[in-house]
Each structure stands twice: as structure tokens, then as C-alpha cells.
Length: 310
Ligand SMILES: [Mg+2]
Image (cartoon, rainbow, N blue to C red; front, side, top):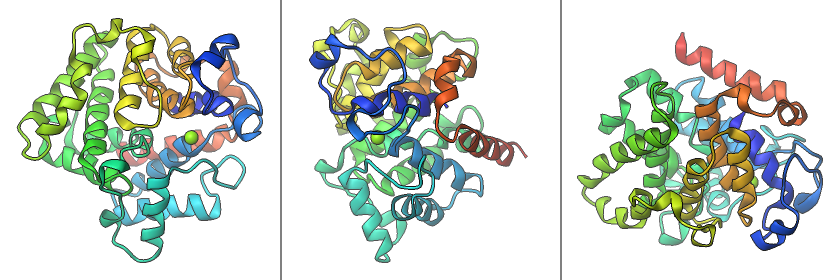
């Protein structure tokens, strides 16, 4: 729900630049705008996250996840109003390959240009699956990272996108440790992921791109130095920066939306983590109440919860 509410906040102003938003910042749920949808409408970020959550409640099956993605895109399942909108190029191409019979793990784009934020925005439910299989310390296990990389590779197979997902899931795991403040959790999760990647042949050289996240002064960077477009590295940085510069769910996701550009996805990526850290009750009730098909989303979450804790 943390991810979904943030997505819905960003949808009406997607692609708007931050200078335009500065004159009229988003402070709550808006209607219409970019896609002319009513307030509380969520987009591909939430849809694909729900596809993954639904599939994981039946176990880990790459073909099944891709079939859910295809049912979203072609049939409008997992959507607010029974039709998909807002799909990225790399994701669309992967789904077309799958439809034409390509094996799921060979569908994802793997060029340098396939590093949009399309796998990062939908990867979060995997956290709960990994914890149920490998325990809380899953980030010390090769198998767990291999699963993260494969779930990314369904659509985004380049190592840069896979590493972004690995860092994100590792931070998400740390967010659930109750004895740690937010900055400490980000530090720990990031540190564990970096520790892992530094010794992986073929992946370590990509880490230079994520170096800023580890810089001491990262949180203090001025907004001009934070990009909020669709590039996966920028999205991960922007989300972490918003988390580090706020201390509650509402301020975090509004900061993300008001960075402009890929508003819904930067907010969704930040909002997923903010939801884990601050909890459901910190999400403004008036935002949750307008989410389209709220009960349906909550039922998919509950289904996953029971499947994994059985
Ligand atoms: Mg979207």
C-alpha cells in the first residue's frame, strides 16, 4: 500500500518537470492530469507489483510471473479499470517476446539502453518471499541474489538493473529491523549489498555507477544534483535521497513526486520503503481511502502473507 499510494500521487503529474511543479506542488491526491484518471488511480508500477505478489503466493515460478504480466498488459488484469496504461519500452518488448514463445528468463532486454526503472518499481514483494525461504539474513546468500536477478531479468536483464534491484531489496530487508533508524537501515542494507557485489565477477565494475549512494554527503546533496527521470540509477538515488531527507511517509512520497519527471515511479520506489519503515498507519488515511480497488489490493497482500507464513 505504501508503494501504491505513492504511485497514485504521482500519476496525475507524470512527466511534469520540477520547476513547473514548484509553482503548484502536489500536496495530496489529485485527479485527472497526465492520464486523465480519477484520484486514487494507480499505474503500471502497482499493477506489475501486484502481478508479482499474486504469483509469489503460488510459489516462485518465472513463467507464471510473466503470464501475470501478460494478462495485465493484454487483458487489463491487476489494473484499476480493467485496462493497462503506462508501459515502458523494455517491458513491452519483453512481454512481446514471451507471447511469441521465448523462455521467461530470456525475455528481458539486456543492452545498456534497457536500464529504465521498470524492474526496480515492481520487485518489492520478492522481499517477503526471500525472507520466507532464506530467513532475515538472506542477503548473505548467493541463491537469494540469484533469484532477485532472475526476477529482474524477466523484463530487465542488464546487470545494472539487476544490481539496482539487489540493493533495493537489501535495503528493504534492513527497513524491517525494528531496532534501527532509517539512515542506519539504509546504511546497513546498502553496505550488505555492496559487500556482496564487490566480489562478484562481472558485476563489481558496475558499482562505480552506484558510488554516490555510499558517499558521506549524499543526503545533503541539493535537489539540483538529484535526477528523477526513468533511468534506474537515478530512480534508486532519488528514492533513497527522499527517504534520507524526511522522517515520515507523507513527506517522503510528496518530496519524491515533487522532484518531477518520472513522478509515479520515483514515488513508488520511495513509498515502498517508506511504507515498510513507517508502517501502514503512517500513510494518510484520506489517501488510502481513495485508492481504486483498495480491498482488492489488500486481499492480494493478505493472500501473499498467508501463503508465505503457512
Ligand atoms: Mg507508472
